[in-house]
Image (tube, rainbow, N blue to C red):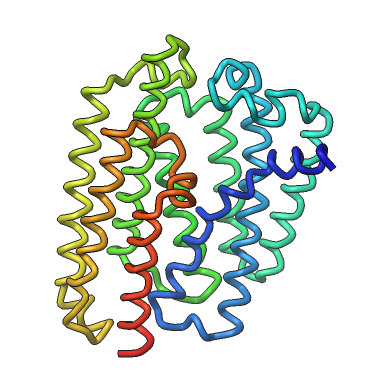
Amino acid sequence: MRKSLALIRLLRPGQWVKNLFLFIPIFFSGELADELKLKHTVLAFLSFCFTASAIYVINDLKDIDSDRQHPTKNKRPLASGEVTVPQALILFGLSLISGLLLAYSTSNYYFCFIILFYFFLNLAYSFGLKKISILDILIVATGFVLRTIAGGLVAGVQVSQWMVVMIFLLALFLAIAKRRDDLIVFEQSGKIMRKSIEHYNLDYINAVLMMISAVIIVAYLMYVISPEVISRFHSQHLYLTSIFVIAGIMRYLQITLVENKSGSPTKILYTDNFIRFIVAGWVAVFYLIIYHL
């Protein structure tokens, strides 16, 4: 039983929440009730989940030595010895095959191309690109854009330029905050947990974090008052959702700069009541505007 739980932990199912970005296009298109489109989106979601888990396994195999020196990552299944290397390799193969078969089941070859591109991009990231400063953050942010575009493809929904820009900026913001946490660990322990950290410092990260957060807010305000967007949603009240965005950014900055706990965006989503309330409120308001007003 303990071994099974360790294998499940190695897949990092808690990180699958990131793949909910695939549902963004179908949600904002107002076609969430379309059973066929929703089915394809769910298949795509599961495909990304298993493919991402395969990448997590490879990444943990690659970083097994450095993880053992990390104050929290040393509890991961491979670093702690709960799962052996051969077992991890078998799990990697099963996860990857499952992800590719699910991609094929969507009958969308463009999506299959994206899932393959996502896999090889992250493979390259794990085996070297993550050591290159700035590029490492850009690749992480690109992964969220790929999820969103993939969701649009399988649902047959056009993904707007606004959506791509907003998703990229948000993902960039979260990735930069995560790098700041790596810097804090380095300053406290003297151990370099990530090679690219050598080319960052707190002044630089804080400045970029402030810049991106400001750009997100301005871009979002431009989005909700854009005549094109107002016309598409048939609502003059989209600007009200900016309250949630501004409050969410402020809270995440507080977590990052004051509490120094931005190491895991998914953990924050699961545990921070304020962030959960903001996300739920933002989704609820848009749901009312799109589906009931």
